[in-house]
Amino acid sequence: MAENDSTPSARDEDAVIQGHNYDGIREYDNPMPGWWLWILWGTILWSPLYILGVHFLDVIPTYEEDLASSQAEIVQIREAYEAANPAFQATPETLAQYVGNQDQIDAGAALFATNCAACHRPDGGGLIGPNLTDEYWIHGGTDVDIFNVISAGVISKGMAPWGPILSAEARAQLVAFVRSLEGTSPPDAMAPQGDPVTADTDDV
Image (tube, rainbow, N blue to C red; front, side, top):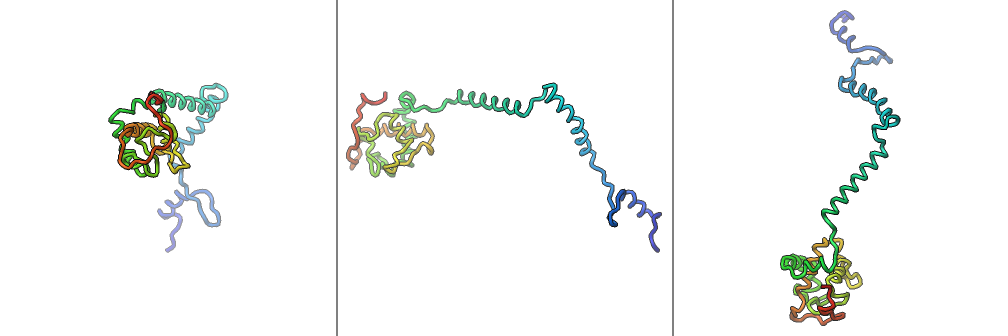
């Protein structure tokens, strides 16, 4: 027996199938979720308020104003950080705080053993690189000179620049260790190279 439109299943189907019929394809009546409709109406109501606030009442900042304010805030944060954490300056005074300080020398010794000993020997007597234990220096023998050579390297002689690799503090610790090698006279050290730099010409 064929089912007619008066049966419960047909009435239920009519309740959920409403509206258009396209080539036998019928449209279900699926209402939008309530939360979505609230967002839609809230957006519609907020739009004229936003336009008034930005363009007429000047109580809502524009994109450009908000960007400028954020950039100014970033500048203030950076300036405050730099004031609290000043950048390391390789001056005679700052390096003098490392040279002769045993803790800094020990830290420099560990860095030297890892990064420098292959070319200068663990005792600093020189191998591929020059002897670091005598008073002769090729590129200047002040604390600042040594720091700068460590930082920039000597590409023509095969010494890599350590500035991009080691922190300024680590390079200052290396200066402290190199200074501690002076006068140690290791056996079979390389012959002097460069010019002598005595204590009275050093940056102290």
